Image 1: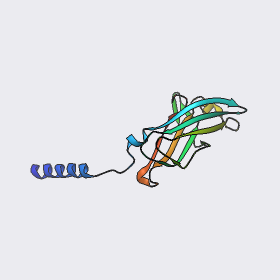
Image 2: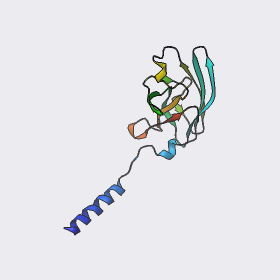
Image 3: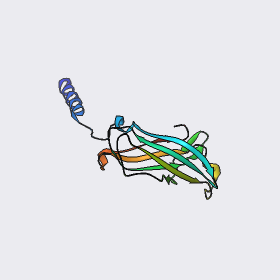
Image 4: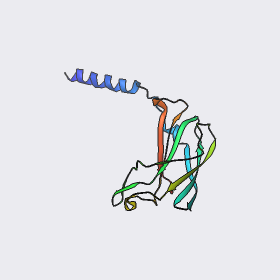
Length: 148
């Protein structure tokens, strides 16, 4: 019985090692950089100027860049906000080594219950594909915009 269990465990382990995962590897998209260049209050909103740099070896395809203000859940606990603003100036195919300047205008007017929105900690998010537009090559990166 012990011998059969050991054989099954070894067989499962070997099968797991033999499986390949063709999803975009972290090393590819970890070399894509979003850098805040400028933050400027204009009228009843804030403009963020961001540089997207593709330092990976892959073409960044059909990417979308969004900025949103997180929602305060509790003290020092924030959640996603479904209200996101898409960056302007983006391109569909960004080649390795290419840089793209993006503009994001975040209106402050019209935000209901602003006490629950953290406007001092905007979050940036990039969703896209590396080389091929399919579920295997889809990725998403992001984080705090101000401290990038």
